[in-house]
Image 1: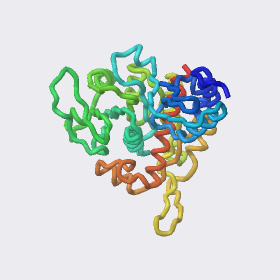
Image 2: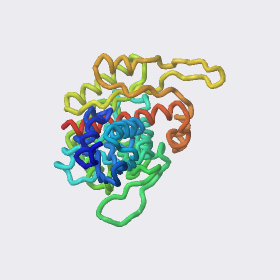
Image 3: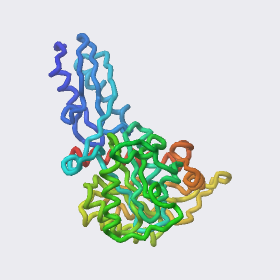
Length: 349
């Protein structure tokens, strides 16, 4: 067997492909700090493109298999993660968040804010740096869902966001009387969203999740003009009336040249915990059919569950408090897919 060299080891590892990105680990610069301990033992770090990578066991086994073919019997792997940034953001704005995820819906009442809050918490639980911007100017409900009612009082030139479940949070609800309606025209909305992006001390974030108001109005246009959007997630329920409006929202992002990360079907079939009977209050499979027809990713269906609503009202996101619930499992899987999709987009550019 040939003497182990760095060139020989990297040559072997070029045969291991990242399953989501479809390129080898060496080309993707995922192999770091390679050390040859002796003729049969090596150590190195694998730097994942997202802390949400669900395929680490597969990658590890593939690394061990190809290295065994060149005589390596002992392999020590350290796992790290570096989320690739959307370079457009770093080039255009003096901000510290690296990717923006717009959460949108064509109509209200489909659980868009619930998805946004749980997606942000799920990404934070996976180890990412996450911010959550409540850009639903007219109905800012994210603070209630996250169990926060005010900003911390920290002196400085920038606003310090609230912190809940490892997520940094900013909302219009923190700066206006909660009992008063917000009656603003386009320029005021534009100014508020710009300030939320640039005048808040977000810190170093891998992802800024942005909860948009329903529809296709000033807030969506302002956001797309103010910051490059890494991608958009479209939230719908299964019934046709929601799908028709979701399609309009999706088409809007296409016109604005914002990549569609995928479609989430919320309020899917409910399973009676006593009988096991599945009940489709809002229909079933509409989001999947829409995604297939439009050839965009289907991120998953979140089943209808009273605990999701109760958790939202109590400031207890289900992914943080009932991780074994079917809805929480679905939302965590959606978060992983969104993270993987962003990595693919950024590394393809």
